[in-house]
Image (cartoon, rainbow, N blue to C red; front, side, top):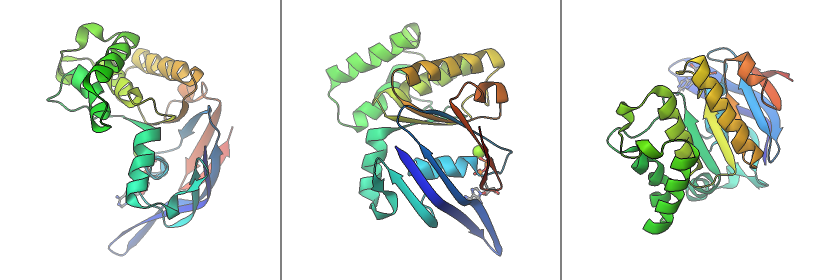
Amino acid sequence: MLKINGLSKYFQSGEVLTKAIDGISMSVGSGEFVAITGASGAGKSTLLNVLGLLENFNEGSYEINGTEVSKMGDRQKAQVRNENIGFIFQSFNLLPYLSVYENIELPLKIRGINKSERKKSVEQLLEKFGLANRAKHLPSQLSGGQQQRVSIARALSCAPKLILADEPTGNLNSEMANEVFSMFEEINREGTTILVVTHDEGLASRAHKTIQIGDGKVMQVS
Ligand SMILES: Nc1ncnc2c1ncn2[C@@H]1O[C@H](COP(=O)(O)OP(=O)(O)O)[C@@H](O)[C@H]1O
Ligand SMILES: [Mg+2]
């Protein structure tokens, strides 16, 4: 599904050149559940952003579903992203002025899905994630764990083939973190490929494969 070879991504700020990703090669097969670990500043978020087509890279190659990303234009990238990838972030990134229902509905609206189809999908997701009685709440009226459940439901609303999650349990207590990983396991069993960045070794060990990143390089695969 994803295949990168000798991938590098640099940031130039003033005189300082940071190699956030420094020659990483790896592949992620369809249906895999992969954890990415590593110290702060190792390049995990940059890697996830490049894999999610949110950022460009400087060197190397990246194939997604057999298509080379450096040959894609911005429109094609946006299309591949919208049709294939769901993002989950540490800080939930829910829109504060939209209800739980509206947050989950938004990606479907952007895709031009009609209202009755949207209603069907959103209601299914609310049910699945135990949020049916929270549909009209604003994010600020929910606990952290509930907010992350909403953001996972939102990421799943367009039935993505790939979920990219950047420290999704970083703001949660261990019980809620466990619950989020259990949801990932369930989503993965249903066929969605998952790449999750985490600091928690216990959680990482629940993935099929762990890739440890350090200084923009792959340190260990286990
Ligand atoms: N937009 C940016 N501009 C300049 N440097 C950046 C930018 N984003 C990340 N970096 C640098 O790239 C390195 C990797 O960052 P990041 O991918 O956020 O690491 P991690 O997610 O593992 O903590 C760090 O040294 C960071 O300072
Ligand atoms: Mg990060």
